Image (cartoon, rainbow, N blue to C red; front, side, top):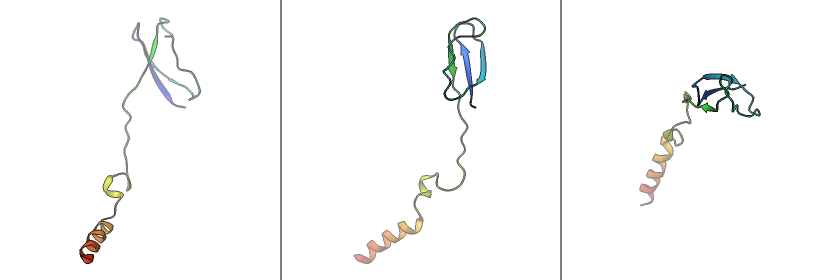
Length: 74
């Protein structure tokens, strides 16, 4: 189950809670009954291996073949 962070707009109380994807978002602060908002933070994503970069999609041999075939046809 994912963990969501909430912060109260009235009292500033911040907390995290585990909720299912199908659960509704919390709207009431458990401390002061003020309005809650979800807190979003940066997600650390690391791409490892081949296929994630622009130059991985093309092989260098196919680029040289197309240029060599154009020079032989001329």
